[in-house]
Image (cartoon, rainbow, N blue to C red; front, side):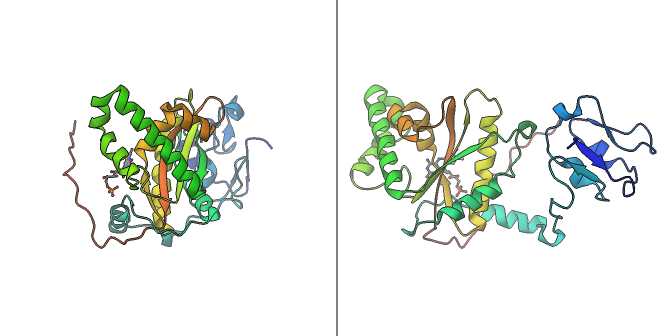
Length: 274
Ligand SMILES: Cc1cc2nc3c(=O)[nH]c(=O)nc-3n(C[C@H](O)[C@H](O)[C@H](O)COP(=O)(O)O)c2cc1C
C-alpha cells in the first residue's frame, strides 16, 4: 500500500497530521488537496503512527495501521497526577523473591507492554533474552562471581570498592547478593554499533520494571550481572548473543515475597532553571 491514504469524505483538512508528523513529511498545499506525502516520504517515514492516531476524524489510513486496527485511547484508564505519583513511588527494587516461578507467557506479556517505550527515530532496536530456567540463572550468576574473583586478583582496589570481596564471600557462603536468588533474568540487548540501542534498552527496561509491578511481579536491576555480561568471556559465551550484539541491561524478576506498606522519600530535586 502507499504510505497513507486519506478518506476525503472524512478529512476536514484540520492539519493535525501535518503539524504532528515528527519528520514533517506530510504537506497540505491547500484545503482542497488535503494532506499529501512529500517527495521521498515513503523512505523517510519512521512509522511512529502519530498521523493516524492524532486524526480526530479517522480519515488517515497509514501503512503502520488503519484507524480500525489501532485501539481507541481509553480516557477512563488515564492516571491523574496523584495516581501517577503513587504508581511510580510504589515501584521498588525487589530483592527477596518467592520460589514460585513466573510463567514464561507472563514474562512475554510484560515485554509486550515494555515495547511501547520510546526509541530514537522509532527504530525499536531492543531485543530481549529471557533466562527462564532458574538453575541456569544460578549457573550464570556463578560466572559473574568468577569474574568478581578474577577482578579481585587483578584489580583489588577497584574490586573492593565495588564490594566484590563481600559479594564473593557471601556467594561461597550460600548467599546470592548478585542476582538475589531471583528465579528469572530478563536481558535487553542490541547492536553494539547502534548509537540508539543503549538508551532505548535502558528506557525499555524501565518500562519493563514498571509494567512488571502492575502485573504483581517484582524486579530489580542486576547491575553486576550486566557489567559482567559485557566483559567476562565465559558469561558472554553462555549468553551467546548474536554476532555484533551486546547486553545493554539486565533485570531480575520474580514474585515478590514481601509487600511494601509505605512510600519512599528521596532527595529534593537538584534543579537549575535557565
Ligand atoms: C543501573 C542500575 C543498576 C542496579 N544494580 C543493582 C544490583 O546489581 N543489585 C541490586 O540489588 N540493586 C541494583 N539496583 C537497584 C538500586 O539499588 C535501587 O534502584 C535504589 O537503591 C533505589 O531503590 P528503589 O529502586 O527500591 O526505589 C540498580 C539500579 C540501577 C538503576
